[in-house]
Length: 235
Length: 364
Image (cartoon, rainbow over all chains, first blue to last red; front, side, top):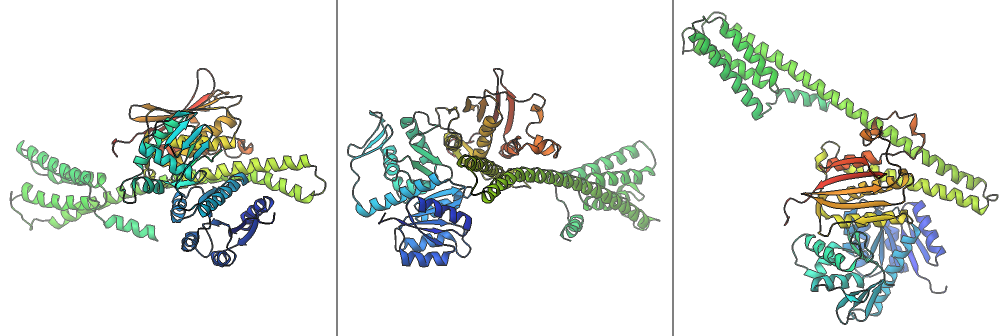
């Protein structure tokens, strides 16, 4: 491959870094490594990698600082690696502009899927910035028709309300990526909405009952407890 | 050092509690009434100080700290002087032996209080010893659970390193799969330990609860479970209405995951697991039911605390025991103010159930 993506791995644990490195190189990615925040910042500015895999717990700096300073000048996709039980850290990282996260312990399939999704979204937003969404989104039996503003399940109209439709469109535009509660609420109800996640939960419950066969075993919209929602990728 | 100074402070501090105040006042009033009654019956006054000493003894015995007893003895001395000794309804501090009476009453009160406080302290120490014992039992059991799979992972890896050239692909794969299994099991143990540390040791009520949708919790658990056991037949059911339940979502997910994994690992011969949530009054009932071999009826009553009390050395060599899973489940549910049940189904298999309180206010 002459034009392969370059991924910067920022991880202080050598073992984990090595294992991510092996996964990436054997899947055709170019790899850069940084063991601490200082080196990471230098490598990001000098090499401009296509994607950053960032461990939040670094010896010298807080990983969130890196996200913040990178987002000041660049939209390089950032995938955060974090421990499972730290929902707050994940949400903070995502709200600061990280694209996605993988929870430790993770498998190679999961990591590769996150990286592919992040790279694809980055390419899309570069090519068509601010374009109105048109066309269709399809995943399994779910079809979102952006032109008709309708959602179909196996060809039948799911009869979503205005807000429910907006939520589904938002999730489908970022399919494969986790969206935080806060992000969804601000996008649908506006930045000044005051209140908790309850209204979103109720809307999600309604959507689930309209598009999923079994709301307890969803095929299209997944919950990431304490973080947000993720829609299945387009198929 | 800190503990000692605490104890001393404890002695000096007035434990203001309405119970102690009411008790002290009640004893005092009763004593006064009793003395007045006896005097009206025409007895002479000798018994009065006896009755007051008894009342001071009772006060010191059944209240916290020293102050109630001391106050009761001072008030008692003054009362005896004012009401029950000549001249009646006037203070007379020149009575013979008066300072002695005061000293005597104070001594009774302080000695009794000291005794009471000591008893309470030794009870507390006993409780702490008990807690320490539980903790070290847990530690020993967990260490064992960690050591066994680590040994086998290490073994597999060193075999591969030392015989790099001579292993066939199949042998290599077997070793790797074994190591992967063990690593997964280790993760499970560690997740359980982390779950326990999320619960504040000292005050069990202090988990942070937020309203969560039951179906979201269930669906995430199901997704994770299917990743680990893709071929397992699992049926999931939640009610039509949205159930919002105050809980620590990570912990409840851990409970459900433990129950599902237990069903797979220990439900011998099961081919179908059912996970359901039902609404019962103001409670949400979660149930995991399998159609396997069920639970040994002898073990059933102690199934949730078996891990902590079992004889640690003999039976634990097989690492596929119930692990700390069920004890952790029980701890988590209790910390949520819920209760956990295990039973064998009439038509075979085991079921585990727990109930959580729903939101108190619909708008909440």
